[in-house]
Amino acid sequence: MRFWEEKKEILHTRSIEVSTYEYDGQRLVVEGFLKDDRFHASRIITGESFPEGVIHHMAIRLLINCSNMVIEDIEAELLSVPREICRETLDCLAPIRGIAVTKGFTTKVKKLVGGNRGCTHLVELLLAMAPAAIQGYASYQSKRPQDYDPQRSKLILQFLVNTCRAWREDGPLVEILKNKFNVK
Image (cartoon, rainbow, N blue to C red; front, top):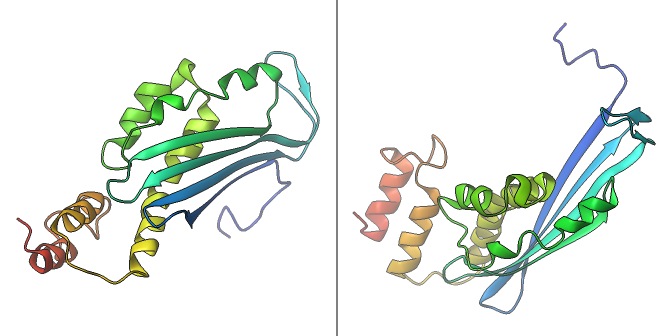
């Protein structure tokens, strides 16, 4: 028997859900939720006791410009947090406005709002939303007529190259796109 086949009592679940919506023909709304559930009462290292149930439940909404994938606006909502002091982080993501969702996004986010500058749960949700935003953008683009646009083609390549083994720089999929879009 493999180790995961004999499951014991469930202790905790974390769910992250991200959805992308068309906004106005030039921008998308990307909405994400993170929810942590604990399935038993607990006492933590500070001596605090928490009942079973929702520990964290939060949302982030991004307004993203489709021409350059820049975050034009960002909003966080703290639906449930373990302590009131956590609410001090509500506006911690404001420095993300104006950042493009592209290579280097994770590093920029951690530098601007990571650690004691923000909330680890909001940062984790935001970082999970970035690749989902790219997928949402791809879905948005796929329902529109495809005119050749050299800038958009370079943007697509920039998002895809070296994101995984299938899209490695010297791989067949990148070669197909480079040839199709005549990109060096």
